[in-house]
Length: 268
Image 1: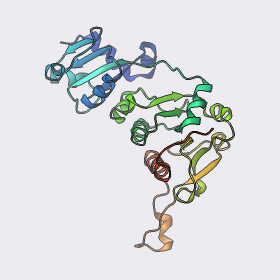
Image 2: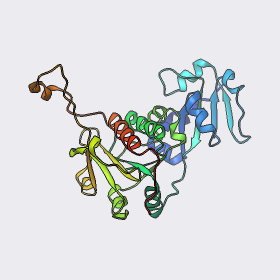
Image 3: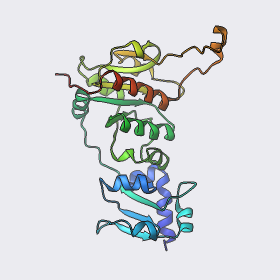
Image 4: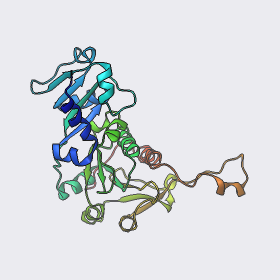
């Protein structure tokens, strides 16, 4: 049985202010919770008896057994999946110099005003797939610890570090020999561009793209081109899609970076 006060406290974590005040976020489902438990102890685990008997927890972890019906009332998901858990929000540990050092060693992503939680969660999952372990986000990007984002990562939040920072400040701190890529409509065809797997790849807002102040700091402008269909006339091209979803565009760009140079090298 779970108390009404505990239910209220957990439901409040849907709100960013409450997450910040309590320093906690919610994860749900065996995959997401399991991946996080591999790296850190949970503060609280709320689970069905069937799930909890198959797992071991730290002595300091509060374990609350619930029925499927209780979990449904508590869950942020339409279809709850046996377990939800509360984890501590990590304390940011990278200084500006530390961020620059990370970018000097490998390819990192930067997200400029990505507002949709589903897009942010999917991009984190994409980064995990393509071996990108750090994402720098502008302050107006969606909160990585909202329940919708955490769920959309499908566990990748356990392996990808997300850092909120002023992107222009970060880019101004980068040495001139570190490339800063960004996808824009007037860019160079990404499939005809020599790409380096060290540097920063910037992806922009769902509707507005990369902000002008960030565009000014790009060293390489990239375009994912629209390909003509053999089944339509040239005049019909204008009626086709005018943009890609930012998560899809991120996947395409990351795939091309990894295709052209499988193993990253550090800039000396």
